[in-house]
Length: 181
Image 1 (spheres, rainbow, N blue to C red):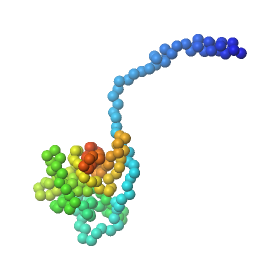
Image 2: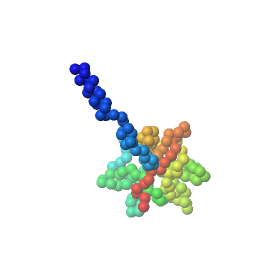
Image 3: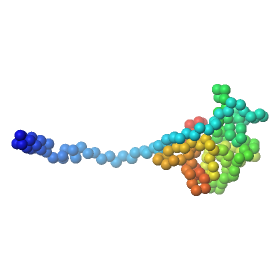
Image 4: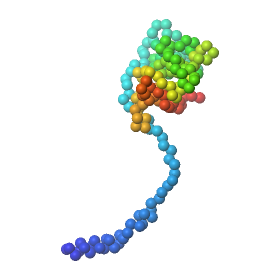
């Protein structure tokens, strides 16, 4: 019995031989892979994003055939019987800034910021501008979503990704907006 095990072992060793054939199959590729950032949304906060009725004397602002209803610095559109919270699109203009607006200067350009929206003064009005990278805001609105951005917890609001810093939240990236035409 011992001799049979020894014979089988030597037989297997003889026919298996060396592992040179395995090394010949190793292929090294020097291709550059495009690394895409993984953005995972988690811990969605439940906030009031809808209204059944608007406050009295709310006047709509019509832009590109859509009526936007301003309520306390936030905007709502009418959909399926309720008013849904939305952000005004780029190019949307106001005659008067919301009362919650603060002035922020980023790389020499002056912006007004209110409830997740950046505005720039143009010809006596205030136009919605894209979020400037590098801007630091003290607080984010309640409906900012917490996301996992390449393994780091960030916040996303109105197509901008915010990183928490010492004195508030800094915009580190602006996501592409599929709605722009």
